[in-house]
Image 1 (spheres, helix red, strand yellow):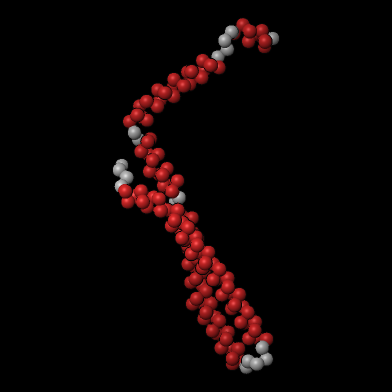
Image 2 (image 1 turned 180 degrees about the horizontal axis):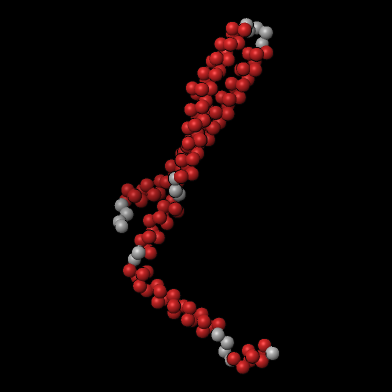
Length: 142
């Protein structure tokens, strides 16, 4: 498997993409919260105002409902999608592991030499842990 320069470029830009999506979703979430607060405030003000007639209150309520359906809900859905999408983008470390580990694991030296080196290491460890003088160990155990 050969890694092209463009692949390396995209690999290095993954963290930038994550940052852009996080910032965008944060801005959308803030806009959603502000618009919801303003919507509730305008509805509360229209209901308690003695200057507005019943027809005007109904118009304000209809406009607020239309705003909620056409502006708030899509904005909220996009911000939730952006947050979920951000968590699905792998970081540069994850991409490195995805590309490098299979290449190393499937390489010929790894497949042939590593089991021999592992056995040699196990035998050396057993030799280090083996008691030097079995008589002293038996006497110490009694």
